Image 1 (tube, rainbow, N blue to C red):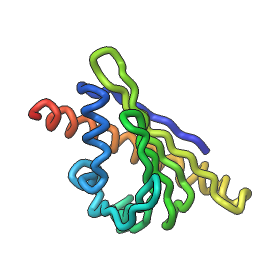
Image 2: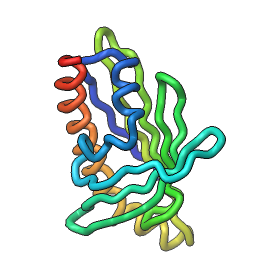
Image 3: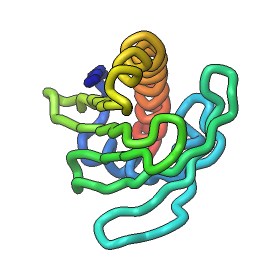
Image 4: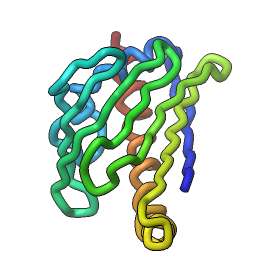
Length: 148
């Protein structure tokens, strides 16, 4: 399953990338996030411990995070409920603004059961969460970057 959503943000692509790449400050921006802490640095990526309230339940997971300087931040859930899910935050220049795209890719196993969970359980939750995340990033980024 592949889902994509995007939003225009009134700031430069470079400023937005610098803002988003500070993964340990994500709880200040992302709705429901309680923790986002780098626990390991590896060659080319880091491992981030995350904790958030998701649909009323406290969840913990680790994500591998790697950066494409100025263009994208990539996440892959290394453990947790949606282990293996990949999330890409892709930035594009759009006139005097930036477009932030969030792309979720999820392929749960076994395939027959995974398809049902993806389609009927995860899809609506991911779409709803992505929209909330995009709106939160837009609101905070436009205020913080404008003040900088």
